Image (cartoon, rainbow, N blue to C red; front, side):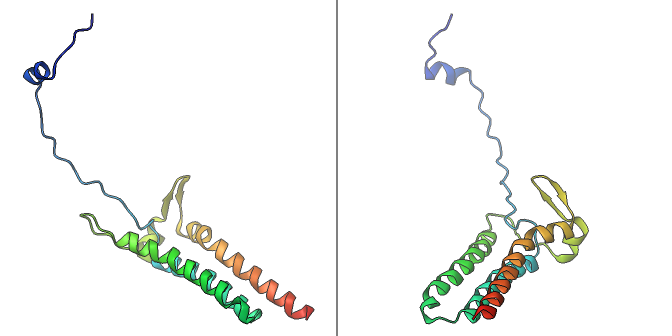
Length: 141
């Protein structure tokens, strides 16, 4: 049968232990070197610069400025987030360590080359797509 236990009854028989809490360490760097971040940002900003040069319309100043602002904020927030250091130092992975160890992803270990391709494929394809669009627009005019 169930018996009603009061707080006082439980406190008489309870043994309390203060367990030390180990700080929870979080790696906010994504185990990638700064060059991959810079390459990604350069690909996106290069696309915006290509569109600006290819379609130099004064009406596009505000939309392109907003796009550049969002790209800067996308990478700026990551940089600020990594620098938030709750009791443990963090720094970006060096190229040597990245080449030696690669990176662990949700789907398993990736080598440095495979991880670099995965990170840089979208910005490169977007830049090449922009180059094709500007080329086609120049040939049609």
